[in-house]
Image (tube, rainbow, N blue to C red; front, side, top):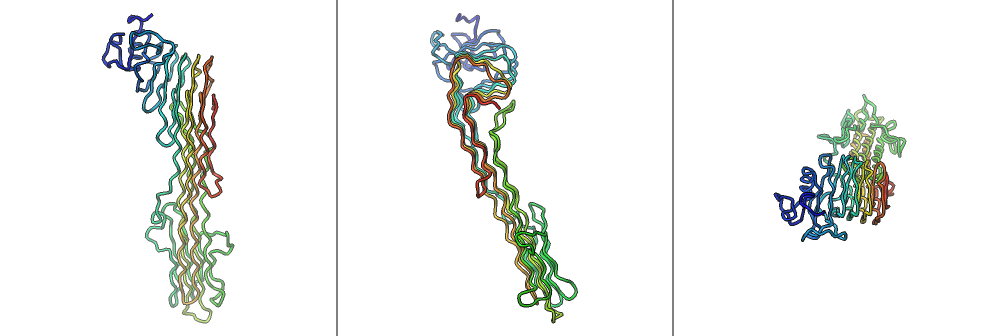
Length: 429
């Protein structure tokens, strides 16, 4: 029965301070819910006067209300072909949490906006921790999810990486005194590197540090014996190992009581500091001679950023919410592709070899390149995406779009790509 004594009335043309009657309807469905709850009435929403640009929120303070949306605005005649449409410009049209008292929506349409920001999902309805909510002849329509953010190139500069206030070039040997060792600490990683000391009559040449044995097992060694043609020079230090690449996203995302979050990849790691060059040898017959010092190793490159997860397109998102669906139409569109991981920064060059009155020191090994960022997960396109018991469905239909493609990894071989998305009518997690 269409009666002011039995229902609160809402129209797109209504007023915020209205009485909520047929002649003086409210202009907001959310306001209508509150009044209907307070008055112990149903809520009638007219459907042919335009959409409602609002985000409905149902909680344990607004339970027990029956919402009907199939009314004409002129005369409040019921028409089963009409659907009152809630279509906000941002966010989720309907969010319901902690509904444990029978509540229902009939002849309504919830239409989500397209994902715009990087990795933004389009979700038409989200119900969490609820056991007493039902929908009948309702439409949930999600639009396209947005592509995940591509990983960023590190904004760490070479100056940020390099040791602060230290010249990493090898020191020259002088009469009677070998080139001094060079000790340096990388600003970002705290790793230390040392260019070896040059030999003189009192002190032997020393190797470069840290000790690295690849690719040259003799890398960073001090000059062998005395300086002569073809021997006695300090050996160039080995390069630092590249930083580990970040893993690509291995799951589609995570659903909690608060939200769906698409899965991002992992950022890479810093490259390892290079080995210092070894100190050079003096001449055997010239006691005043001295070898040059080795250059310190270069600092490792900064890591590449991870790709973000692609936005989902989900008609109805459920977290521990076994809702009842009768003749409900669930429509999802294409999900967003995962974002690409970015390559790591090239490691810094090692210090130059120090000269000597004898053999030169070794050049410092270059720092390892930063690790590449992993790719983000492709987005999900689903009629229902749920944690916990699946909904009880009678009638209706589900349409889904395309799953999002996996985000490419930033590594040269592409081995750290994210997981491809998924498209299905119902997706359990």
